[in-house]
Length: 174
Image 1 (cartoon, rainbow, N blue to C red):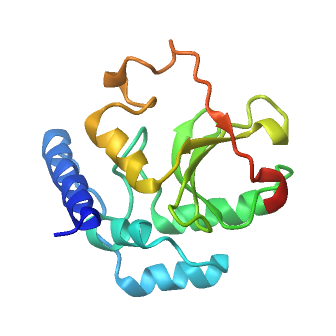
Image 2: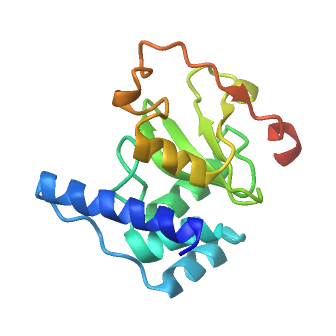
């Protein structure tokens, strides 16, 4: 079993355990054709790990904060943001609603599927984008082990003055 398969199994196990504790079923995995259909709509390929989360673990509802968006909802959010006044970068798919109009987004054009934080609250497009994690795998590991800034267990959260690095590629991608 490689690292990706191990990570997917850890995520799936946490999802199973969480679903049992909350008593509400989560959406089942998507058929592989659904991911290909989403790629056709947005015009770019999804990173393999993201595709496998949707096709092997479930269609959202698990993960940080309110959980991953169902894939159709992620695609709809991408399309809506692309025509909004925020100059949304191509290939950056919102994958989790973090509340307060913030999204965790996967840069689908990054080799590591880096995770970006979109926070429009400063009101300035250039200040809205930060690098949350250098990779989707690292972002998921932070959620699994409770060390990510968005985890209550980490002790960071709202009391912590979160200072993520600005996303350097923003200007070149709009």
